[in-house]
Length: 576
Ligand code: F6R
Image (cartoon, rainbow, N blue to C red; front, side):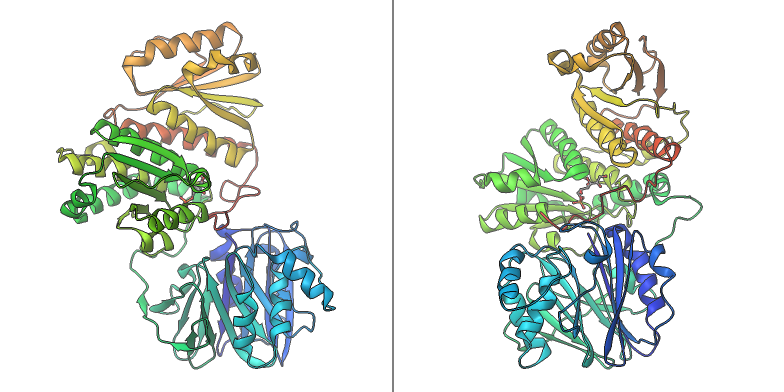
């Protein structure tokens, strides 16, 4: 959520920063900008909209030091005034910020009373003016003192007009630094380092850095120098590429078989079963926590673990955290997060940890804040996901939990043969004419409906919702008429008769119905049936979501929207 890049070195930096912003764009695309240090003067260029809007403004500056930002708006609308970088009142400091300064109003009022002026509605602008206010000794001391008064989260890259350096600071939001002896880089996503450096530093909370052309120096919050470990850029890091596909989302859906095989074999062959059993020893309850799509994957996990004898619960991370439930010694907490950065999920991990609970993190990245807090990390190894709407990562989260459950029970299975049966070529109907769409299913199919509805609303902006099929007659049936479409999902022959009754109730009221099923020979009065190859009871949930992901994609394209960059959203939600 929001992207930061910074460069200092011997090459003109505008194009380097622009290319970095393109790699970070999935984290936010409301507006973007750069601050460039040109002969002891900071120049800014800014644009509303995605990075392509900035490209026409670059090339006119002779700058070898610069910072850049792509924004997902939290405070203040998407206009030029609120676009980063923000300058201090005296123009000597430029700041790009990811995160939220929760007490920015207090700080702003104090600065206003001291005569400071502001040009934006953002929380970030107070950082630039606070640094100016504390600028009494050295630049790094000014930064350390300024952020000491701030509550909330930040990753910061900062320029000072009088120093040929980039300054960096971090609390909660991710930030990384690299140096090759001639050029220094700062970023909120290591992906921008690929092809430039082989190793990088991970900044930890309340650490600060000064980057110049020779090297990088790190400091703690008392201003003392600290030494830090270097990490290699893993071979799992990939450069962003859509390959033969017009959009990342379509590519990522077609990546599902490969991603599933990677995840399945990675867990099967590298997970330490003894360690897992030790973690689960004496535990009766498994609690699944996540947000959005990851929450839905956790719901499937709850089904799988219930089947092998555990009591299970599932929570939205944002609900769990503020409910402050008792952390129980007989529970294990499985936190699911593609990015491992999601603020709500991370807040739960901190809370569970503080209360001595045991955590298994299921993430799609080798390094992230969530992994750091976990007793055990289970990697989904789906490969990087760029489209904001999660697809392959979701399928991999579901197979990860299924694989965990079978490992616990030592059940011999071979999911590779099911993966080989996945279909991608469906004749999908045009549903763009509907203003109201419902998804209905029972048991695990209902979870798939939740995910199908989320995907559809996220990228098509059609108002749709998911309902357990049996609940329709308890209220929602009143919305059914001949303008509504219901998408019914069924993988379970034991409950098909009941679902067919629900479909009949919809048909009797003029509603349109599409049935998506893995069952053969179903006899049901619907507008159309989409048949999905049957695998097994558990694995069917992994295969039947694919036509729903493709239907969302197709509808989005027909409506003329960009599936990779849905409005108002961004990947990696690092604010609570
Ligand atoms: C929807 C989607 C989101 C994420 C959610 C959690 O397509 O991608 O709902 O699943 O924001 O993100 P992670 O998994 O990174 O914690």
